[in-house]
Length: 101
Image 1 (cartoon, rainbow, N blue to C red):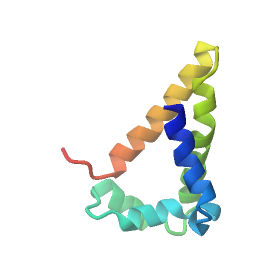
Image 2 (tube, one colour):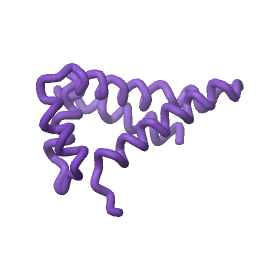
Image 3 (tube, rainbow, N blue to C red):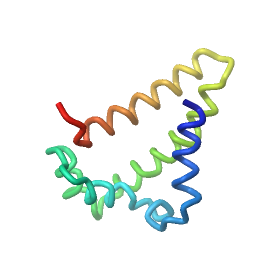
């Protein structure tokens, strides 16, 4: 799990994609979904000029780059925080994506 998250975050940072640098990647993600569900469509229409889209993109980067190190912590409380961060990200992906019933 640590390697997966670090890889996902590193690809976003190292790709030199301007949308991750200016934190507009979430808007482009919602635009490019082939079959968006109702929540994805609402998010796409409401986030283009809203700072919440930038906050979400920054949150994704933080979760993907910080949580992997928290998973390795000797403290169970810190590992729980990493687990919670992971679950928030996965729930958002399931809520806004179109992955079947």
